[in-house]
Amino acid sequence: VTVALHPVPAGRTLPRGLRAGQARDTLLGILGLLTVVVVWEVLPRLGVVDADYLPPFSEVAAALTDQLGTSVFWTALGQTLRGWAIGLGISMVAGIAAGMAIGSVRLLRELTASTIEFLRPIPSVALIPLVVLLYGSQPRSALVLVVYAAFWQVLVQVLYGVADVDPVIRDTARSYRFSRWARFRQVIWPTALPYVVTGFRLAAAVALILEITAELVIGVPGLGQRVGVAKSSAAVDTMYALVLVIGLIGVAVNILARSVERRVLRWHPSVRREQS
Amino acid sequence: MSLARHLLLQLVTALALPVVLVTAWWIASADSTDVFWPPLSDIVDAFADTWTWDRITGDVLPSLARLAIGYTIALVVGVLLGAAIGLSRDLRAFLEPTLEFFRAVPPPVLVPIIAVFAGYTGWTSKIITIALGCLWPILLNAVEGVRGLDEVLVDTARSYRLRRRTRFLHLILRGSSPQVAAGARQALSIGVIVMVISELFGANRGLGASIVQFQRSFAIPQMWTGIILLGLIGFALSLLFRIVEHYSLAWYRGLRQADRGA
Image (cartoon, rainbow over all chains, first blue to last red; front, side):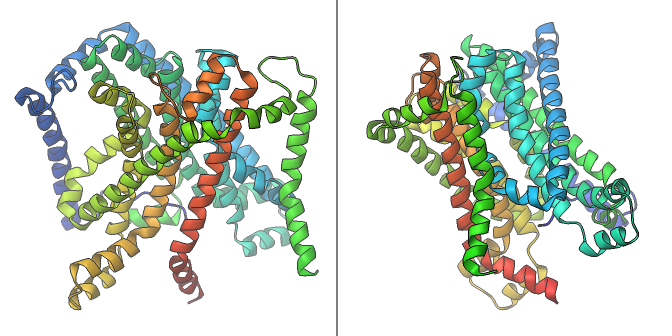
């Protein structure tokens, strides 16, 4: 199993030709985004798309500016981010702890394999009716869904990581009578770290999906719930503005996860190679 | 150790924990009077009465059919668009930030948007939601897969003047398939999520809709059977995916092994 590390954007040490290509790519990318905005503005204005269904970009931007001035929006944003962060944090800690414990004992690994393979693909949305009964629209409902979805992503990656330890290094550490802690700190943890980080990246994205889902479907307070409110009060432009914000949060989460990946794995050959 | 004993031992290790867990659930819930946690025996009893043939053909199969159609659309569109975008550096640079944005939008928020356009009662809007949710991971992975094609193979195909069709089938599609499979696996779990969520809006039938109706009418053991059924379906789909992947990527595993051996 290989770790899918995302290609790292070029550092400052690249040769000039490559850097020029990079600048060109960035420019093209910005041009692409501008094109989307222009098309979005023009289509409803020309009547190709009904403006009741898709208001022009400028109107959505105006609605977004309105939203930015309300406290309701900022509260909802805070609630969404908090729910996401707490859920992700719990899944990371629980996933790493369980993964390390299960991964380093062969008997445990074999005993739990079938159960993990069974529980992991169960869609966490299946739990929606249950959490609605138990917690209603409290933030705890969202938390259960987020943790259930994100935990398996982390756990499975950590298990891969622990299994990837080079047997020669492990045996060497044992021959030199490394203490249990030293073996963990010097051998297992550095090997598993790239996998942990991959688990973090996957879990961060899934956690956001489930947080928004819980808000939208169950009515847990947050941006997703505001989208539902905007939809049912026929404030279509506000709805698009909120979806835009949610999308930007998603982009920010991805960028954050990748920068964590690069920072934590600075020493790792796969990252060093791309930067030198 | 004989083969039979080895297999038996494997079977025992695989089944030990599940049996313990189910037994624990059975015993712990046996005298449960808590409305939300009915005894497991009640849930098992309710299973056959709840998921009758009528309900399977009226709710479960339509849900799965919508998932299959939406997923297939996403797969075809994702691979074709991904190949086109991956082959041109400029097009890739032009579209990449936009695609990254669309990928980052959590698929469930598509539901209200599509509801504005098409209402949310028929099959079409649900299939569109599923297809759009599944599209981005497949598309972005296909782009990466095509970008990562072996340069030597690409040049060889050009030198031999392989026909467009041959080049697409045997070079591009084949070469990017490991990456596409990774995207398709992500897309499948998103697809199941969207399948359920798409049924929670408006008056609806379907697997997700039935489970929520059980919950709203406080038919708790029935709700539990629905949760378990959904879990079994999720498990079965991922198993099916692994089997398909196992056979279609057999060449890739062989290649990797040969690389390592060399």
